[in-house]
Image 1 (cartoon, rainbow, N blue to C red):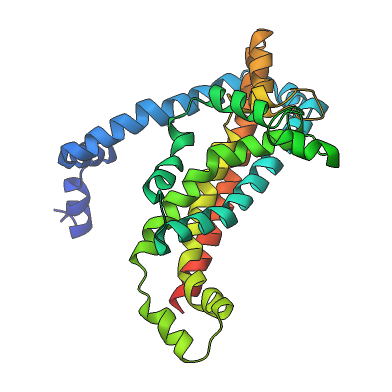
Image 2 (cartoon, rainbow, N blue to C red; image 1 turned 135 degrees about the vertical axis):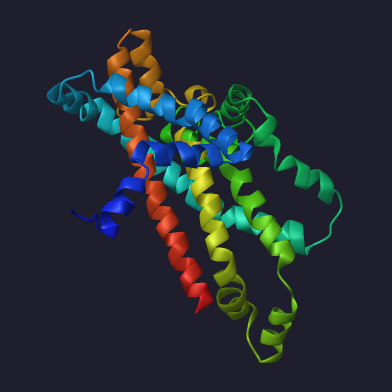
Length: 291
């Protein structure tokens, strides 16, 4: 007579992998189930469908579309301009948040509410407004024209539109953190002889840096996907100020659905890589702040 070992007994009673997943799923709370369903329907399935559509093209054809001269030019305009716009807002958006938190002045509430205007304003209206104001005969464009600076219907105009629509992300991200910061540490630094610049760089900026990077990442993501305002303020000329979202729309107008999907997949992958890099910078800033 043979005796089964304890290992065999445990293996015989161990549920299968499918049963384990089923038991885990049944133990999930209703909030988890709703979250998984919502993300599956609204995020993962559309992204998967886009990858599957792009995968219908042979690898050589995919690479040819993704690395064509016009596609590379639009990547350059889209991502470089978006990064520059996000960086500008990282500086001036933090300055705006600082003024709104630390100072009291007339019409402060109106100025504070105006910061959210790019959220509520239709992007096409924003593009039309910016194109009018920065045209050669506009209020601001007429002041820049004698200096040989042309904004509307140029790449600079695309940058201005991206700065406009992404500004609230930095301001609204930094503002709550500034409101929670205590002034006692700043006053202690001043009492020890630190200058205002030293106080800002060594006392205020380190805890603010991860938040600023978060706002920059959000603003960058918004700028990359912007279409309505940039398509109006730019001339949409290839190799000059044509952005990738407009190129995708042009491919769709030509019934080139696979080509449009390939460009979209490349935009998605590049955006993910850049966002991961920004998140790594955030993690580094938090570790630096904790030291």
